[in-house]
Amino acid sequence: MAELFTIGELSAAFGLSPRAIRFYEDQGLIAPERVGVQRVYSKRDRARLQLILRGKRLGFSLADIREFLDLYDAGRGKQMAMTLARTRARIRELEQQLEDITITLAELRDMEAEIAALIRAPTTQDAPTTRDARTDA
Image (cartoon, rainbow, N blue to C red):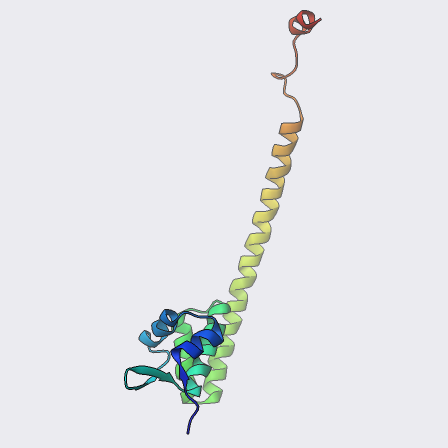
């Protein structure tokens, strides 16, 4: 007999709420069976849930993840080719984001240095005038 899991067991195993698991079910990404009123998940559902979470962690959309999962049944070669193409596209996307973040950080550091220098250096308005200096004496 196949190993079956309850929603509570999957929830605990993956640190997800039952609601999140039901969401993936509603999206058609996993398809548990029912025993009476209880959902039971197969090893296949558990493996698919693991792939869903990995895909999300890597920044793939649910549509991308659905394609990965759908291609699993179509054959390993086709699945691997599509996964490789999407992975390469995601790498390019992240590299561009990293470049953008690096540029933004440099601009913010320059701004920070300029502002800090202005705060430390007294302006001509802050310097005491000759008249003020005489009255202080």
